[in-house]
Length: 598
Image (cartoon, rainbow, N blue to C red):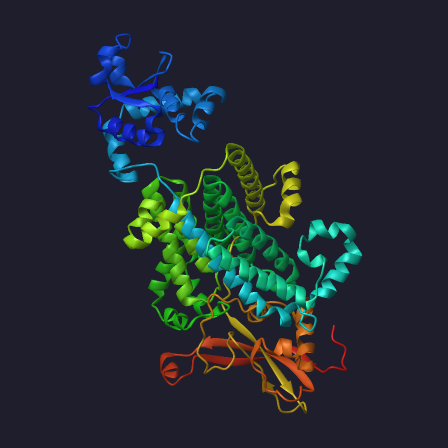
């Protein structure tokens, strides 16, 4: 005989949640109103029916209130945890019964709140279509990242590149021995040749396409994680960006979601929370006055690494508008992430708000696939019902026929959940340390032990706003008197050139030059190597540039000039001028090949 849940059919709140539970448990539980069933259960006083739900087990035992609720939920797949906590966790039962009594005494108000938070027709959410679309689109993110690095790799880390990978492999092998496999897990220990680099990049691109078309998705996700982790270490100074570890972590969690949907889904939401919230925290924690007085965006649009053409127009907005935008951004980063863990409609607000911020950033700044990946993570804050409202009916039906998967086996689901708990614990240790805390030594040791795998990482963008834009301009000369400029593909150079679009490409040399302008050149190992390759007219490196002023014969001398850049005003821009620049001096002195380059 099936267990029976008896509820008050005259209570709108009770009917609302009984209908929801019935969708969860299916025919495993029989649902009846006490108005219909009271006569069959004379042992239960009428006042008890009116006070709380009653659960009659298959052997005739009667439970009520919170325990009855948890017994009912235990009949739904994956919901038995609540009954286990009620029975085994000290204090949980008392707290649950108190909460039940509090809610039961305010049922009309709670019904209105339920309608507000979940809607009139609240049914258990499904994520088949959402996760299917997410994984296919995530394949495009991976594709962008692998192809972007593939076309730059020969000039960056190839045998004739700026920082040859073979030199790194030889140095670490000599110093670390067998421990290198643990401290720098990458496939390049077996070969660091140009062929190996190309093979890793283009294999990653091919597997990304397989993921897009849902061919061997789990195998593809696993190998993609391994290959991009390898590139993270192989890329050295050119792979130091937060979006690289952001991609690696999202890639691993996507693999987890493909194996066990709900643990993976919640871990990806946790990743989105940490990424957004910590980006807001570091801005205020840095003490930078431009964030506290809301003037940061008055500088951001012209000082950011690679502005888009629309950034010039954003910079012309009134000061009050820029301050409002800055305050709105901090609200989105600091407050909306908490709605990720709230009921359905509040979670939707978080999704829309974070997505709006990412679109605004995408329109005004070239941040490769970073904003696209963050937008994609926002998709996981919605469910299949919400997705169906925006997709054409035919496309939604096509996705539905291909998205359904069998639930993970219990042992797999348990293992995935334990792994999720481990990752959450370590990410909390990292966040605590970022806040200046001192987690227990065992926790820190565990975090350090798995850190090389980048299953979880620290985040926080633009902690300190740059208020001036200093640009490095590389110049070459044959005679040391007449100097000609090298033009880069994406970073500002010629004041008359419009800032280009490069999303979702990540031009790593252009980005490194933006960071180099904030550092002393003597601290940058790669910079001197880059100038050496310029003096050699190395083809692999020259392909990273837009224009080589010495295509036939390399220059005898090179130097790096230092300029202050600001946006041109409206009149000058109408004449085709985008930037003003003012020479500050030399960033790096004149060098030539026979000179010793540190």
